[in-house]
Length: 260
Image (tube, rainbow, N blue to C red; front, side):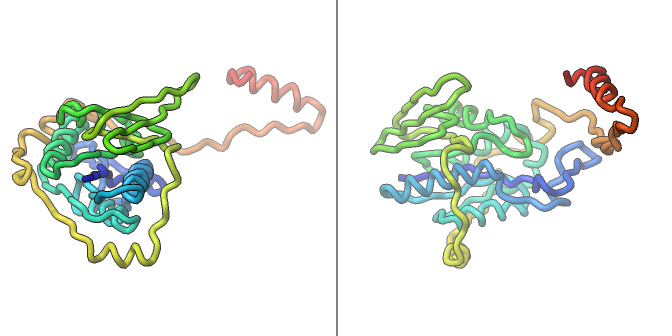
């Protein structure tokens, strides 16, 4: 079984995130980045499926040069190979263009099972798995909090606010998992060393038979028009109770600000 995990390189959530002044896109070159935390659950799912049967896991990412770190992390966790699609023309691509690039790469890889996380920690849209499944003409079982693979059948449990449902499909298909699906493993020293010898291919748009006018900011369906920095946190209000009136002042404050 050929299992491909679509993994995204995102800015570190603990770092100071910035936008490029020239086009209001996320600054990925000037900040620290890493494999999206939500995609680690996808990697763990793929590795578990591999270990319970027969197959190989490939990490696929689309992004700038630094995105190679996302592939590296997946290899250190236990994946077998990596593919990095990198091209200057990709900059500014939205979900629609990203799904096009991924679908072309997945078709080239001849994936049997495509695994996504539930969303990216920088965009948080969660629409790319469905878009990719539509482009590939494959069924999609999404947002699985529990995943079972039995031969050619993939079955998930999807948990909602009021109920859970069981959904299944037949390979090949597109799968996405939630952050409740498993507990991602930490790379071991052995895994870190072994990752250095695993094959990683670098593909351009030309390798996928795509042109620059099909992707990038110029063809995006969405655009960030303006960015405003978060205002500094105010000092807050201090209520003292020197004469016994503190309780009344506190109630008045909570009521005025509609906290009560």
